[in-house]
Image (cartoon, rainbow, N blue to C red; front, top):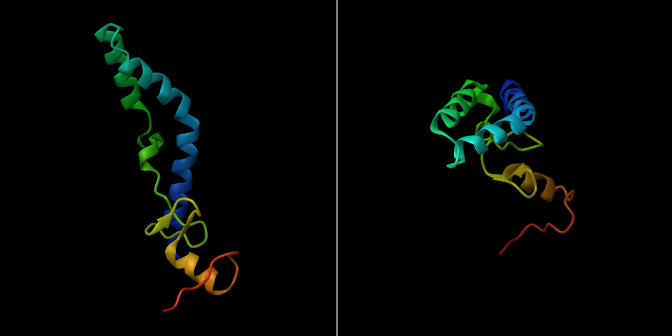
Length: 101
């Protein structure tokens, strides 16, 4: 099980990303628009830099929904390989069969 503080920190980041997503997208569109004057694009870049650092989507860490483990994460299932194996062995995931050879 991951530290509760790490999981909560990641959840706070998710909320910040949701809150600032529209504003970031708007500023990025201005920065990327080559037809606008350089001064206006630079001002948009400065505003983008002044936003909270944790409001960037790349700051979010994918974590297991069951254990909070940050590594070996399956996006489709939203859980780690360890939790997947444990739930599969207990028969809680339909269609998952433990292989043996």
